[in-house]
Image 1 (cartoon, rainbow over the protein chains, first blue to last red):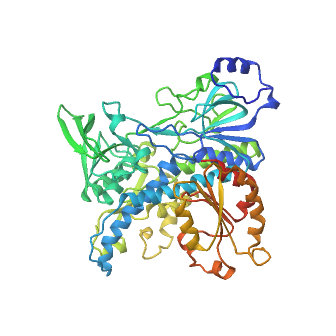
Image 2: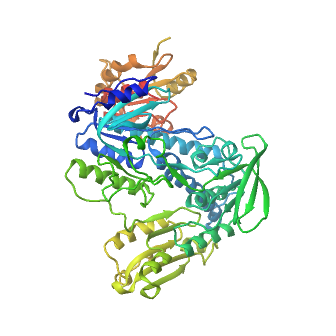
Image 3: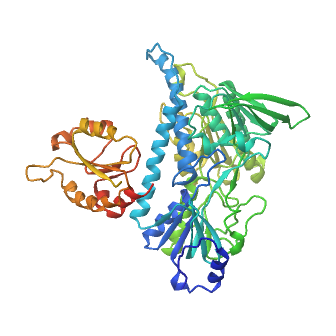
Length: 494
Length: 122
């Protein structure tokens, strides 16, 4: 039988030994999950419920700036959680401004302390990291803070931060290694730029910031940094929020621009140089137009790259076990049961090809997969009509088709779009914009005017969207929507 | 140099003591007061204490274990007591690694595995 053993300097020998066909009954584990993020932890905890012997491997390769974090994955450490908390910090800043119109009196100018916010956020994240470790230990899931990679059939090598290697075998594997921010590949990018992996634990205020990218990561970060009072510029290569409804995307950009975020459109950085060291220092960015030969330069304290994320699938030994990946994108194609081309190897989360990159999707997929494997369940993850929210200064919630996608799928003459601006009651007294908040639904005329797309731009968009997502899942039609009495006075009644 | 234990009573003494050991890893167990016979009013604390004590040999070198009696039951039940307000304690017993978000509360303290994890892992 094959056992876990320490292997310090001879992986080749180990592989030869492992080449002796392992006897099925004596795998070290029923299931090994590579990656302790949203998908991986959900799957591991679920498997433990069915009394399977489970191991989770989680390891964070430090960023070029040296940032690292604990168990829980992207969402908990450098994604959704800190993002929403910092977005909230920015909203509270706005609320303080509004409060004067509602009668609150304070004479001092209100300022923001980056370190106070960041310490509180990191403290909360720390309690989540600890909570996951307690849960795993309590449910008898073995957790190792080690980098997992396949070295042969049913066998992985786990390397901890001290370089010590151990081998483990399992009947089945779930790959849930997630993604990391992409770099530009230009001089100075890794030396001087930061990414979202660094931003939420940055031990100094970023100051005047250039955000490169037009993804939701870029816009959300630019949004809250500006909301905290920083000078923010966003450099966009072409369009905003690719893949999202473009009319909504442009409204978001317009709102941000009118509220203090500078945009440089149709430029890409070609080099980043350090003018002055410091925390933060001063960086000089040179950029070239995508529409001609024009070059521009700018100086910033911080350059934040948010140009995309790449799956962590290239260095985990997938070639050793024959798992196919999309060579261009690194994503793993799976069938509708999250199974790769190798029957005993599954995958969940952001690394999946053609699936939504969202925490709740990964959790749902992980749980249902494990229930199918060990509890005889048959339910598959439903990737259709998944609601999302972009937490830009003016929040955007959506479920279903964008207008462009609906037109493409059903034809312009077969869809009807109903839309409306609205002015949140809470914005009236402080005289905030009366023509920015906006909602639209897209209906399929041929199917009883079924609501196939829901879009709302306004405060608490996430809270508003969640309920409508359930309605859409039940087949909401325009008539049903019309006959639902509104709650007054709330934004959602529009 | 191994680990050492210090016993304190009440919030002020706890804070003073913890500050005095600044720079060394500090672990603290908070329990309800004991009567003249050495029995605590807090039944979970009675259960947890021997389990925690059994794992103390796992404490890292140079660390300090502060055994802190928080007060009588009335004091503890007051939602504004200093332990709740300043240290954010939600129950007794609480076993924590001072200055970090790592802690075990109530029945979690009964599990030797978790106590060991708190003492030995980062």
